[in-house]
Length: 153
Image (cartoon, rainbow, N blue to C red; front, side):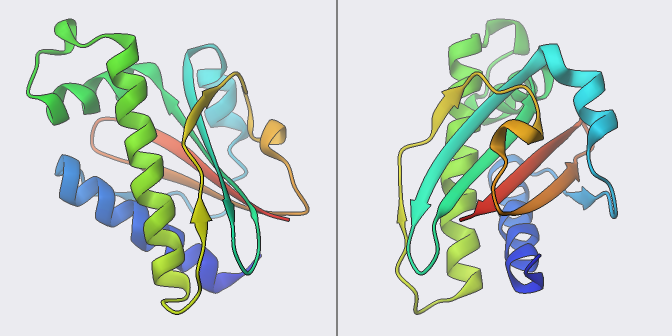
């Protein structure tokens, strides 16, 4: 695991969540996420974005649907009951897009990375986003927790 990359991940997701959603973030240290996935396996919105640059891979975000709906509600200024699953998915895609851009900017301001278009995928656990080198991060907001997994090929 690359410490600088993990620090960039923490910084980026913190900035996105605090700036866009007014949600402070705490991180669960030393966890593999198995309890998180066991609790949320059937209720996850999973968004993936591929990237290329000095190294390549993908960033997966695993967000419980209830948290995604709540964040979308806050972001859109709507009641949770008025937010559709599609809108929640679009908000998670935007979180992933902004987070990916921030990760590489914080990691190396001079490196050029190309970031793909975030997509909702049918993955159910971190193993499905496996790669040679993975950086797993479990993040907790006041209203719920979610996971990020950055793979480096």
